[in-house]
Image (cartoon, rainbow, N blue to C red; front, side):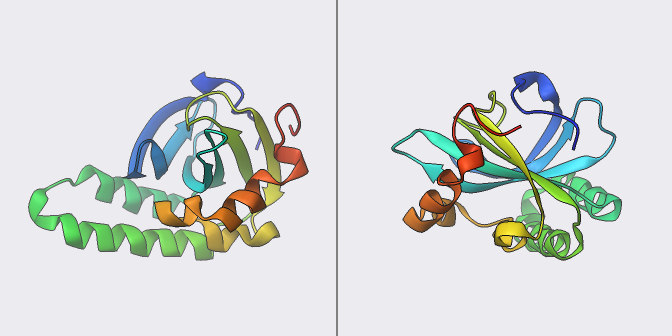
Length: 157
C-alpha cells in the first residue's frame, strides 16, 4: 500500500456500513488507487480520545456487491440488506489477502497520528475485521492495539 493516512484528503469516496459517533466500518476509495478498501474499527480508547482502524483492500467482486447493497436503502429491505452485508463481510474476511494498514487517529478521515503496515494474517487481524462497536471498546482490545510500538504517535510509516 503506497499511501499514507497522515494526509486527511486521501479519501475520495466513502460508504459507511456501520456508524456510532463516527465510522465503525465502511468502504472507501483512496486518491490514486483504483480499488475499494474496507475500513474496520479495531479499538476505541475513550481515555485517549483516539481510535485504531484497519484498512484492507477489497476483492473486486465483493466490492461490487457491497456497493450495490449500500446503495439500496429501501426501508422494506433493511433487515435482509443488513444480513447480506454481513455475509459479504464474512466473505471479505475469507478472501482478502496481502497487507493491511493500521492507523491511529482521533476519528477516521482525520490525519493519522501513527500508522503501520502488516500482513493480513498477522496479529489475528483477519478475525477482527467487521466487529461491532462493543468489541472495539473492550479493555483488552484497547490495550492490544494501542500497545503496538509502531502505533505510538510519531512512529510507524
